Length: 395
Image (cartoon, rainbow, N blue to C red; front, side, top):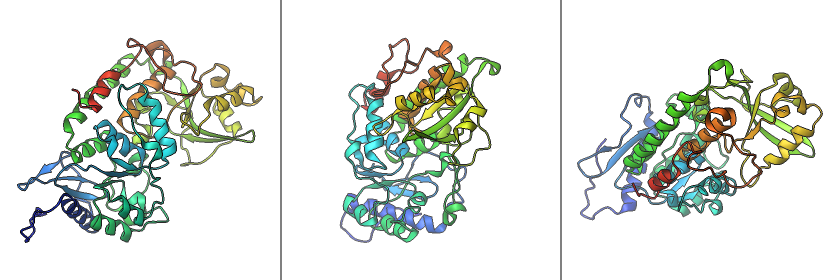
């Protein structure tokens, strides 16, 4: 793939170079990405000063400099930008009033780290006309995932990639779901940290990525070293719930399956109360009683549209539900989000460790809404100030 050397004497503008990268991305999408396996994760510089980064399904993109305005879809991509010091670049996000406000609950514990995501345009079904208006330097979104929206097809993806800026993202690695058929042959699954490394290369923030990796490695090592023997670990039901007119809807999700959606849970080594689940299927309360988990982790239980306290109270007062061991023993806990980037990952690793193994990692306090609980330095499983310093560029 050649560098950006136009035949005109006029120097290309920043927008020109980013559009050129978009054209490359569109071209690679058409050609396929089956040659991605085993390629290096870091950016590849060229003699002209541009650099290239590769990730399925978009393929290789080429940029002259890090993007300053970034359209995001899934929250894990936006989280990565924030972790790398570019949270202010995000100009679109899925369900911003929910996820933007949710992230504020984490950021309460990180000094001088803030976002204004809650008021951003909603990236779901946004339409290509709006993408032209946003005129982003990068679309940090999985192009295959975008085509499940009513407002996009593959032709639209390629048009935006050519005329505005490249696509670069991966969504179906969340639980190793099947992507749309048109993208399946060229799709590749990555871990959360592999995606993070590639996004860091796009922003030319490899040092920040390395600093975050050190924090995560230390946290995982601490958890692994202090886990109780397998025979002493609880059986856990990870549930998303909805309460309407006194009726509880229950969606069970796996604890230990592949994918970044379980990246904050697999290291905890707990036994899953549900196996062989139907993806995004529901169960009734009787099935939960029959499973009788020792612990219930209520995911998506933090944020402005969630009411964990109401759900927990419902379980404790329902004559059927209160027979469940987790309910009877006051071991129903919140989780913030099913998926997230490196910032949510650190907080939720700590959260889960305290909820499942209080003797080893300290107790999770009774949560009645609001910000992520404040722990003393001795109770923290990772250094909040170091995380804030990395985000703020003070390291």
